[in-house]
Image 1 (cartoon, rainbow, N blue to C red):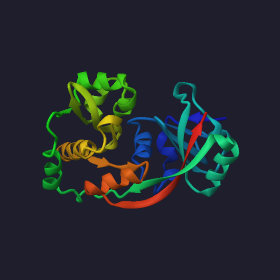
Image 2: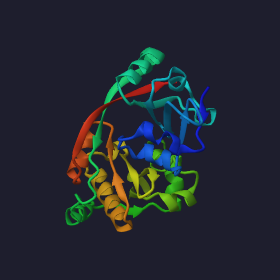
Image 3: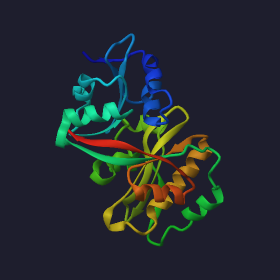
Image 4: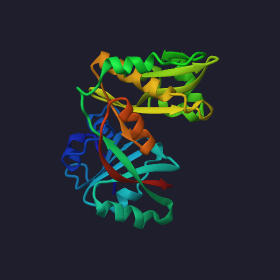
Amino acid sequence: MIFELEQRERAEALFEGWQETIIWSCLQGVMGKIYADDPDNPASAMALLGDFCFLAGKPDRELVLYEPGQERRDLRIMIPKGRDWAELIEECYGEKARKFTRYAIKKEPEVFDREMLQAVVDGLPDGYALKMMDEALFRRCREIPWCCDLVSQYEDYDMYQKLGLGTVILRDGEPVSGASSYSSYLGGIEIEIDTREDHRRKGLASICGAKLILACLERGWYPSWDAHNPGSVALAEKLGYHLDHEYTAYEVIR
């Protein structure tokens, strides 16, 4: 039987040393949820937020297969803590689990060069407008498939205004690139960046990212970055981050 933990701190030891802000969000009760094999003394736990599922502790088949009804998704990114969890994911899902590599980026609060970041922002091409995410843009981004993840983890704009932060580049009044908080934790956000396909390779993602980092620093928040692919690593490094390590993840079709 699987339980949603009300006292989330009981799973902290299972995730110890895992420098992922999505896990922190779940443990802190800011966003997401923690599920476990036992409500009082868990040996296995899952941190679940949006598309992401982190598995820790003793490998547990029931937990790997568990999908809360209210959290149902057709595709889930599952990240195992250790080879035993990875093998269990492969055993449970077979061809429905596509193994791939993600890239952890170092968390270095003092690394950012504000003048360099501002110079990137100042390079906005003619014909584009850069705005901070407001309620109208929040609602518009929710309606557009390519950029809905900029705001999708927030129940409403009030929640986003309190916990999130974002910036959007517009062309003819429509979003074409954006950087925003995929999720929030105490003291920072996890960055999500995307650009509409017909406006890529113009430096727009860099500009949005630089603006968002500067806005976070002004608030005293840390702008955490975790990369889905080498292109995301390159963009992060351009903005001042450094690669920490590669890790294994699975895209699982439910």
